[in-house]
Image (cartoon, rainbow, N blue to C red; front, top):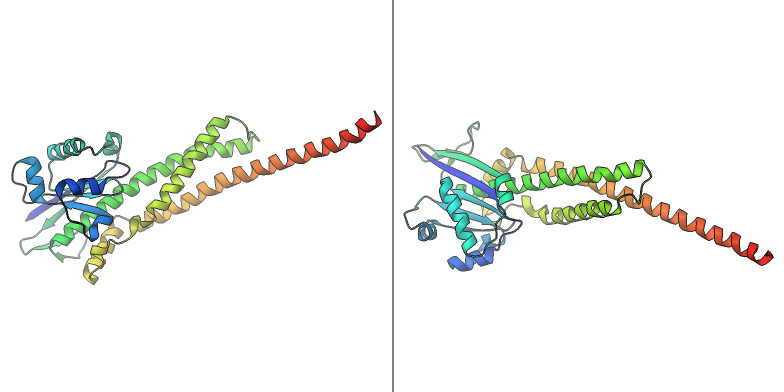
Length: 269
């Protein structure tokens, strides 16, 4: 039996795919819009030794999937990216990662995961699909974590509303709302995260495999949950702004009433 090991890391907010592809003189193809693949020949040039069963996938949203890499080789590849001026974020690397193992039997068939009865004839497209799904799952983990943090922060807006403290700690309020806005902007970008890449949409078989593996990692369910929590975030900020706006209008109205009352009084004096 042959074992294929996958390791995926979130390494940056975005990766400069064009810059990396230019370094390796990779030709533009359909995969460029989402990822580029560095094959064994180019990896051998980096490591200076045979790497026939290794490959690396770099995704525009900042994830990298390594196939059949040992951990010291992953670290060395990170150092190589730094040398070609690709900035990585060590905090993200240490916090967001996924691993998966795929076993090919003696007849050349593979189960995508252990507890499934489905078997597939092994081909390189299977590696592409697993690598891509792991990257999407890792990116979703980052978004889920960020959403949880922003929601925790936004609870302070509710506390301000409950106590009628609309002007309390205005710098903190501005910071919270800015975080919410940035997250919602990034969420718009991530809408296409679950899209099936064009190269996996060419046959019924590749479509089915991509969708099945996505179900295994609960990509759609996790994304749906994330969207519902984003709606909660929207309602919190909207309620705060609406209430603050109503309070401002009330204060303005009271000021106008006071002025109307003062002018006649001044006339009599």
